[in-house]
Image (cartoon, rainbow, N blue to C red; front, side, top):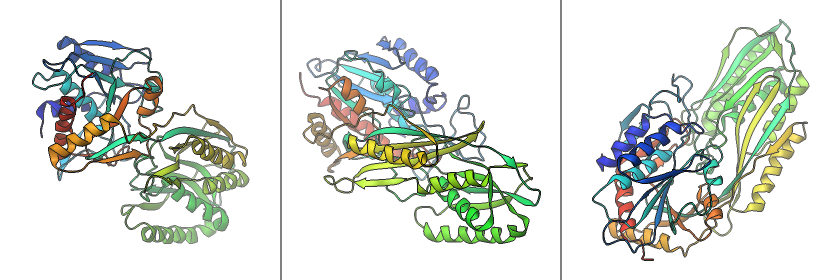
Length: 479
């Protein structure tokens, strides 16, 4: 695993808890390294960290470059894994040339970028002009660090964002996004003792990033579980006690479960229906979801359930709620323009909480689909609230740093890199608002399953990512 300096830092980062909003330990680790190497650093009011390194001899006349990564990670685990993201170090394994977590997210998004920055800051044998390294906070939960970035804090004219996930792909633009939260009160009434209680469990789905993976045909666990509920209401007098699933707004839900009851005289037929439904789903999703599981498990009787009218409203609204690709771009081949993610549902303290997120490379379309989602739930009396959102990053095919990166890739590997826009919320959009004249490009090693416990990173592409970064730094134009 080369280069050793980068991998050593990455494996150290895996030992340090750094969930979104809880990045202090990792930030302190970075500050300690800055102190050890006599590097200037500062922390802004929202917790972003900037570390500066002077140019090496002969490169003092180059434009200043800022390398940028976020220091938080998505914390997702399989239900059968006992793990505390606030305390436990990430356990990893290497399988067929990939490094992955053991039943949890790995945090390569964006730990590998952080590790690369540290390797650049502490290396004595690489060539570069003046460097700033920006470490942002709470990217995964709302781009808080980038949104709170101060103007005139950085001096750099060029930004290398190290938060992309495909070797050989260079991103010059990204989608903007907004969250739509739904709140619906619910009540409970006594469940007749003639009902048999079950738990519907949906698991084994691929999940993934709600931007990068939204067009890959992956199933949404909430939608799949809701299909069972809808038929259960219609044909088996189903009553609902609890419905939970999903977690983060930017992750496609992998798991969901519902505690339900049906009349005892209909229970056998209901069990048969669920088994047949599972077989149907396996036929629907043989390629995208080969590991899907739909189970019906008898459970201890519960005493209360939602009234029929409330259950029907909820389930029908979830069935109607859009999820997935809404519109493909008309000017970029095979590029998602607009999408929405039905991300999570929770029931607690008399309220149903539904989390969704919308993305688009066109600002007006972003708000259009957000209103579509909100309207669906407003029709059943739910309260809806849009988040502040974040802007997209307008593509610039004539970007000078994009050309430097593409030329460097061709020199190193005799391959043509791809210049693309991405249907995900890179921090570049927000940074460009504060620094409108900064030239930007985003790239990284190959990762798959990001934002899910299947997250994995291709080891061979990490070395290519490092060599490419050094080649770009060597060829930064003069001021």
